[in-house]
Amino acid sequence: MVSTPLRWLSVVLFVAAAPGWAQAQRFHLPDPSYVYGPRFGPPLRDRNATELPKPPSADELRRDQALAALGRVLFYEPLLSRNGQRSCGSCHQQQHAFADPRRFSTGHTGRATERNSMSLVHLADLSPAPYQTRGVGFFWDGRAKTLEAAVLQPIQHPVEMGLPLELLPERLAMDPAYGALFLAAFGSDLVTAGRVGAALARFLRAIESRASRYDEGLAQVPHVVVDFPGFTAAENRGKRLFLGSVSGAPGACASCHMGSRPVTCGPSASVDATCFQTFELRNTGLEQRDQRAGATPGVAGNPQRTDRFRAPSLRNVEVTGPYMHDGRFQTLEEVVRFYARGVRPHRNLDAMLQGGGAGWRSGWGGSSDSDRDPHAMAELGLPMNRQQQADLVAFLRTLTDRELLRDPRFADPFRNGR
Image (cartoon, rainbow, N blue to C red; front, side, top):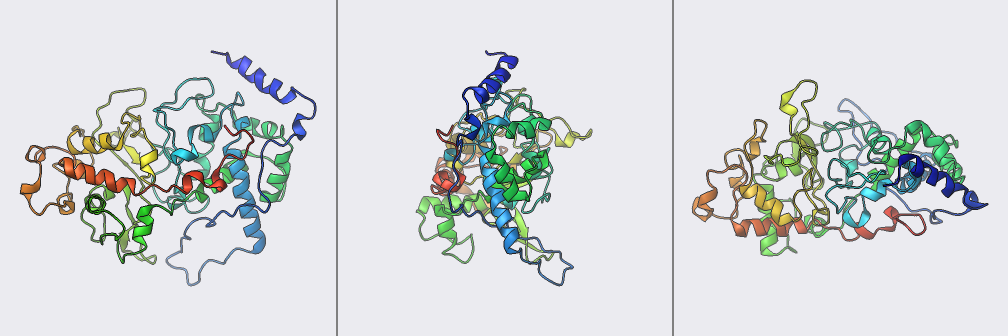
């Protein structure tokens, strides 16, 4: 393995290798620019407000689009890593819905990261505006409270990218093209860690998945619980299993992966049929096989947070494997089989997984208890026979958005993209 000083020297040599390198075009942005929207996701309205928020001006919209374009370049910029060879896009790959097909990603030193890299799709649903969050926080353990803070952590992480934030200005000064990008986005070419975080967060908020077969079906029915006309019988059965009991609040799989949203800013809530992720930290009864990537320590002396992790987005879940915080499962079939008969006891085990799954039975496609697997009745988890497991996997595959996986707005803008 190349030592850290030599890796740093390689960056210096890379920059100084040939006269005029700084003037060479390293990345390409289209003219006219791509359009990124919505601006910050659905606006949150103050319940006591008497007027809607003021719409942005033309200049604000222009700068907002420039901010997203800057964030796209920074997302794929290897100069943000200590050795100049890793970027955010190295561990969050577009063809895998911005997840990593490896169990653990490889950091700038060649070491493996501690956890599997989760998908970055639909983060605007969780943090619709700058410095605003609707729940606990980002990452598997919820440690970052805002998206702007979250995007800076991998850059300075000693294993992942390893670059101190105070070095960001001099690193980006290596490419003079950044001056124009920062000027367009912020009105000046000043480079700060806060501006880098704002640009990356804006780009990530633009990554939305709206063209899956699920979205097509949802647009044709009055409510998500109605069978979708374009689905197979197995896919509709799997959807009913996933939703469980839906009467103002979700049940079954949807309890962790769908959540609810406010209705017209009032106290009531309805099922959020589009997000497919929530902020709450939950214990799913996984056996702790790998202590390196296993237990999350109690936060602030609170043992009830131990071994709890976020429920990641299920959008495009067909292509985001391997699965779980430690990437232990390679296929969706393995994941569903685990929930059917592999859940282990734990003091913090989620209530939905205790005693056969509270609220789970109402989502069963069978008409009576006799349709169930008798050996699963007393088990923890979400009891399913083989047919139900296959139906659930069939439904999960309808969440794949092939357009997102090749959308040029989110692609690597560097020539010979990594």
